[in-house]
Amino acid sequence: MVIFGKNLLHKPKQYKYLPDMKSFLKYTLATITGFLIVNIFIFILFFILFGAALAFSSHTVSVQKNSVLTIRLDTPIDDRASDNPLDNIDLLSISTQPNLGLNKILASIEYASFDDNIRGIYLNINDIQGTFRALATTQEIRNALQKFKESGKFIYSYSNLGYSQLGYYLATVADSIFVNPETPFTLSGISSSVTFYKETLEKLGIQPEIVKVGKFKSAVEPFIATEMSNANREQVKKYLDSSWSNIIKGISTSRNIPTDSINALTDRLNFYTTQQFTTWGYFDKAIYEDQMLAFLKKACGTAPDQKLHQIQLTDYQKVVSSFENQSYNPNKIAIIYAQGEIGLEQTAKSIGPDLTKSIRKARLDKNTKAIVLRVNSPGGSALTSDIIWREVHLAQQEKPVIVSMGDVAASGGYYISCAADTIVAEPTTLTGSIGIFGIFFSGEKLIKDKLGISTDVVKTNKYSDFGGTYPLPIPISSRPLSTYEKNILQNYVNQGYETFLSRVMAGRNLTHDELDAIAQGRVWTGEDAQQIGLVDILGGLEDAIRIAANKAEIDQYMLVEYPTLENPIEQLLYQLTGGIKTQILQKEMGSFYSTWSQLKEVISHQGILARLPFDLITNEFKH
Image 1 (cartoon, rainbow, N blue to C red):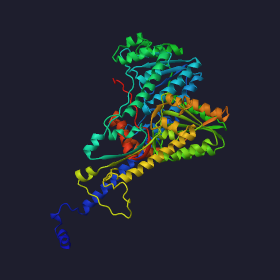
Image 2 (cartoon, rainbow, N blue to C red; image 1 turned 30 degrees about the horizontal axis):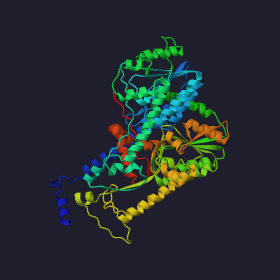
Image 3 (tube, rainbow, N blue to C red; image 1 turned 135 degrees about the vertical axis):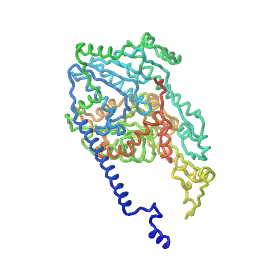
Image 4 (cartoon, rainbow, N blue to C red; image 1 turned 90 degrees about the vertical axis):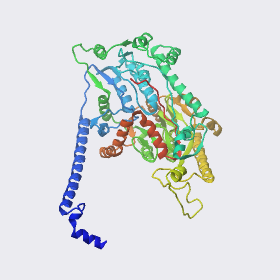
């Protein structure tokens, strides 16, 4: 090596790939320049975002007389809207996006009912997006609009691109429903589909290892079967029928169309003309958008040659927030939002053990007279669920705790709810799913036979290599579980299930046999859950707040929301990393994103889970 080095030194021109000092300096300077350019770009981007956020947050909104509140629900609706203006920025397009939260929507509708400048509400909607098809969310908004009508102000609905089934259900609360004359409309009912991966895993040489309790706990079926079990098919059919029944009942009552006629039309699926639907009573009139705006002018008392004063819901929320910030009352009701998968990290989109800090803070605050726990979760980690349950249980011993269930509060979502004084759910809420399962993956055939990777182990004790090793950068073990190992895990799951049952038994005053008969991992709608004792009252968030105030015996109070939202800098860092990654995937994968996301969650959470076994999809004709 020394001689080779000397030859290099004596004959540098023969080895052109060796940089001389000049080239070295050139490359070094280019690297430094590139580094500076990247950092300057990030610095400039930060100030662009910060400036946009500042401009957005400082934008003042005023409501002119004879205005109409325009409600568009064209982005996903979370339970809670963030006040952080950076949340509105789409980093892919450097533009602001609407930030809709159910809490702000409900508050805006209520405030508009006594705002003298608002003459009525204009629903300009097509579809409604949210978790598990947003059935319960839609119901809550619909109930709020129904209450708004008591003010004597109008509600008119119009769709230029066509109503989805859920969008039409919401529209039926309006005094009149209008639609573009050439827009198609279909009623097809709702369905739930499951994708099965058993044969795919077999071809890859991956074997799923399953431990579970409950014949209805079907979250593991996609990995061990090629079709639904009879028990799973039974529960899915039950809650789909219940949900669809609630939808058509609402349509029937509002439009004075018999439910039998609605179902008959749905079973005769066809593309009927807008005029036919108008004749049958589904629409009041088919008009174009310019005619709709002229109609609104007349309703607002605005002359035809004058401008119609519309204020968008996203702007009106600022007016409402300004009003709420001016009011103060020493008596407080804490609304604690538990939204998303239950795991190990607390974020705006997921639930972690840190949620207990918010519950504890509300419990220890003497001015907080009651707690409303808003749950919108399919479940997840059994351990985290129990940690949160404990804090809910402690709070319930000191002050009223009311649970308000959103679109879904099942499995772990029900676990953290069961200790409350009162549980409130919408008729279409998905809840129950009281059960636990564990899922692990072994890939001996993949690792050894197909990839040719062998593993060996040295251990100090008999089961030091419990479950095998993981030679690949994915959570797949090198060997299957032994019979003894699987029995240990099954016993652990059984214990977890009994613990789950004991929490619900204590909270709902049920015997073991009574609860086990309705548990077993079975999913129920809120309407059915009320009949079997898992839910107390059918209603939404506003109903839960009213119950909390009554139990606390307070007439005047201030609402405070937890957990505390992230500061803008933390949110920016998230968006520059995980947030922008999610946006890219959602944009590229479209409707396939939800399937990919669910599969990723199951694999990443492999272990012991208390989670709803599926997501709900409503089939719609796209045009």
